Length: 257
Image (cartoon, rainbow, N blue to C red; front, top):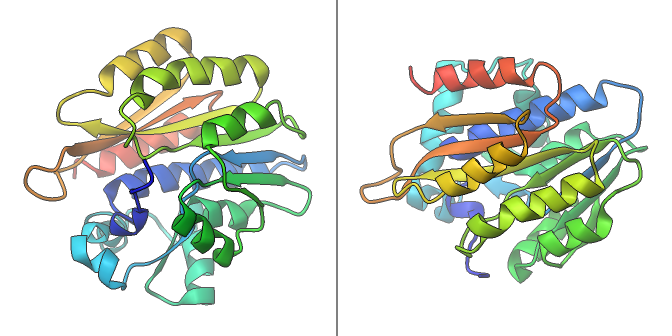
């Protein structure tokens, strides 16, 4: 349960999909003069050096942020590229922002942010990255239940588990139903892997049945290496901000070029 470390996968094709949409949503939400709450259930370390031995060992970033930058998928005005430019100016050209530091780039002093991370090494690295949020070394699902509904009530929750615990696929629909009942105005965002064996399909079927107006954005890409099970990335967004569907469609089209 505590073996997963994202440094081996940071900046990959799934991260690009997830972070481009997350940055777009945060940019949209903070564009209005109203405070918001940001909650993240599985934060990771927040900052990744793509030049490190661990990141270079898999080379997955080259098929994600590397490919996107080489092909000009996201111009300099895109919210994700703005956040990455700020991170690189502060830490160096080889660094990549995880979702906590993407959020830090957009959140304002009047906003509230809570990040959960249970892995001890990842939690220590997250604290060192100074994400400008209240940190919790705690199970993220428990934290979400404890904090909702948050103050301010306007806001976004990112649910991004590693899915090492296979029971997550069965448990997440009930978890999101519970959170949505308590926080009916929150933008609830679930990232999930598309797997070759299709085990995520039952979870998404349940979610789309419960949340008919939610946005489902999926992209496909080749496995990172022969035999690797992840063949795509999905984002399920309850209460999607206006315009997100267009941005998701634009991004999805790039993956098939």
